[in-house]
Image (cartoon, rainbow, N blue to C red; front, top):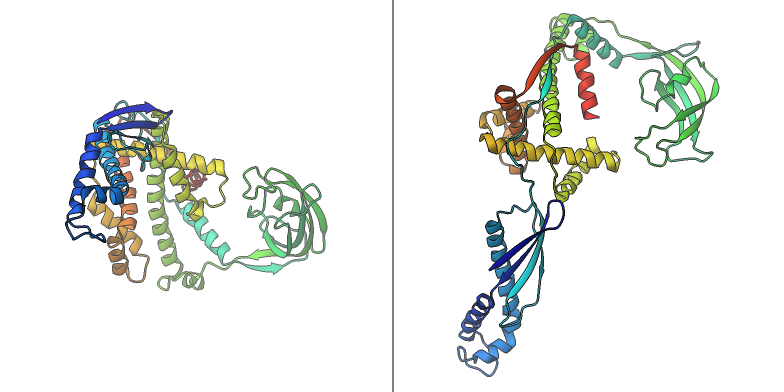
Length: 429
């Protein structure tokens, strides 16, 4: 067997394999000989069919079968011989092979990137030092009050935090667009639920007022029809209402499922929830910094096919739906590059997934369900879902390994709970 490999650009390879004619012809002959002893044909007794008759009737079919099997086996032999790791199933282009001729085929595929040496983990990161302060708990209780707020109509101009009920109709270059109309739609001023510049122009309007608003759709607006374009919205105000917040009392606490110790109990539960969230935010913040640093320090090329597969998976996830193609491409490339780097760190440092941490992660997910044990059993009976948990745990172990053993340069910085929440939102965005 002769093998030659050509770099077709980037990570794509074209491997040409030649298999000697004798290997094909011997196998074809052997199979035909065997068939002649068992095949049944009209006019011949079983086991007495002449070889030339069998060859004439079945020779072409048998040769194709042998060629396919030889291509499969020699492909694996050639990949091992050349130390190549295809990303996906190679595309095979076989040449026709007649009796007495060698078999030649070309396999085209992308390979996993090869890193020249150890991963560069000399990364500077900032470890936020954050505590859940009384002011943070008070702010969270205010948010909970707003979730339970009611609205009382007022006879005055609209202010920030008011709710304004409007009709609207928008045009771009004088033309209508999808979703350009709405009737009696409530808008809370300052909620940023509308496109930038819209809510601000409703401040100061009162019941019955009409106005034309001039706004610009963001460049990354989900609808390409209007993204980045100037628009006019004709609006009419039907009502202005102010927010009425509930009292922080025992009834308020009961509304959030805290029956014991009233507001003291609710405050304690809110504090505990925020501390749990803080723990996750701190882990996520360090992970984002470390992974961004790894990408910056270790630029690598990744296979197009892996990126395309990742895009397909992202499109199936709700949080990524609506992303424009360029943003989706960048997100997919980042995830694939990180996957390669993390795999290399795991391999270089012989990190193995911790089954106890996997179990803990599964139990944490299951705890939010009515029958946790059934959920745990379901995860451990579904290899695909369990693999996702194992992958996430392995990422955490890589982060822990880098913090404990890597070349990270860590400095601490005081930060607030809200700053950490905002940083997490920006990272997801």
